[in-house]
Structures are given as C-alpha cells and as structure tokens.
Image 1: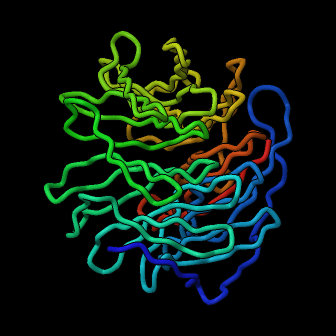
Image 2: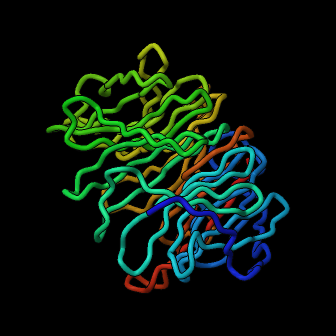
Length: 343
C-alpha cells in the first residue's frame, strides 16, 4: 500500500468526560489520588506530558484522542477501518494500527492537525493477521514497531520522519519485536530463540541483547526513557514474573509489589518512576501500581474495577493512564473503561 494522506474522522463525533471519582487513600503514605473515568468500552493506551491521551473505542472500532481539557475526538485512520492508536508524542502526533475486513494490519501517523498518513513496512505480509504494527513514536516523529511477513515471522522496523523505513532483526533471532523508542532514537524490545531476551538498539543501529538477572528464563523489555533506563519483566525458574529496571550500564534493580507473584513494569518516565500491573497468580485479578525512584510503591485500583485495573502508561508528572474492567457476576460480560489516575 502506498502512503496516503487524509483527514477522515468520525464525523466530528465528540463526547464529554463521564465521571470524576473522589480522591482515594491507598496503603502507604496518605496521598490524594483521583481517577478520571472515560466512557464505557474504551481503553487508554498512551499519555503525553500534557496529559493528552489516546486509545481505542472497542465497541465501534474508532480510535480516540482525549485532549487535556477533556474533549474526546474520535477518528478512524481509513474509512470502515478498525483503528487502534498506540502512542502519542508531546507535539500531539499519534501512531497506531488500523485494519479492514481482510484483517491485514497497516500503520498510520496522525499529525497534530488531524491529517493521517498510512504506511506499510517493506516485506510486510498482506494476508490475514499479517502487516505492519507500529508501537511507539518519539518527540521527533520517529516510529518503531514490528511487521509480520508472509511466513508469519515478526521483524522490527524504524520509520523516520521522511517516511524511510528500515527493518530491525536481532542477529540469530527467530522473531524481533520492538515496543518503544525514546527521544534519542534508542529502541527497546524483545526477541526470541529458544527463550525470550531483551534488546536495545542505538540510534545508529547497534543492537545490544540482554537477559534478566541470574535465573531469568524469559526477559521482556517494555519501555525505555530518555536516560536509556529500561523497564520490563522477567520470569524466574518457577514461572513467577518480576518487574525490573535496567540502568544504561547494565545494572538491574528487581522489584515486586509486596508478596505478589506476577509484577510487570510497563512504562517508565525520565525521573525513573514506573507504572505497571501485578497480581497474586496467573488467574488472579490485576491491579496497577506506581513505583517511585526510592522504591516505594502504590496500588492503582479503580473503585468500580470488579475485574481488574491495568496501568499502561505514565507521563513526566507521574500521571498514569490505562483501563479497568467491570463484570456483573462471575460469568457476566466484561466492560472496559479507560482512565487517568492523578497522584
């Protein structure tokens, strides 16, 4: 598919902020915390430093931008396409994924004025469940993500502002999956052979692979900040998951939320504050967490979250966005609500 530009949107569909819940006190030092709850059937996936949030309206296939003043702007990357924004930078540029009835994935970038450019990585397959899946955009507009080729294999890519796309493959990798890029152009992600390993790719293209602390079976690198510090999760020999922070020099700090067995670091800001999820067992209810640079941790659990809270993204002010889920009864349908959590 050749690149194209359009400003097709959801017909000016706007909706208002639904609910602002009262401040809550959680375990640890007493601190006011506010949940701003989005409409039903939304998932918040990324937040920038101005507290603009992007995500998906899951029941209708639109993406959304929630501006800092609380306005929702719904949009599609192409007509009749299911659209999932994945990342927003501080200029308001958004990247994400869209696809039509053929279930082939394509990438897009939406500029601050709403114009949309679609793109496909060279080598991306064009049949069901193949295609191009952007994951992250930095301040300069550099995008990283991965594509699925005609054989079903995953390869990373980086797209510069002028539209040039370069593939990324870790040497000897069966699959390569970048998930984040910082403002220096450093890319982080994971790859696998018989196990899963993290990697960092410099702006110049040099790739350094790493694994978690001694005993780690699987290492996932989920985010990188502008200081080159990586956050992620590793699985130990017993199958338990533990959060980690990896310094630029390679030193690891590992952590868990109390005695919980599955702690996943998903996002990190430039001060070293981390957001993520934890749960007691593989089938347990998830809660979000915020981990401060001094090691102190707070639980993020929406009051109405009968089926779990997921803290996915964080900005420079430690404001977290994600989603929570509600369920009526043990077998009832699950409804998702995006949220902003302000400490």
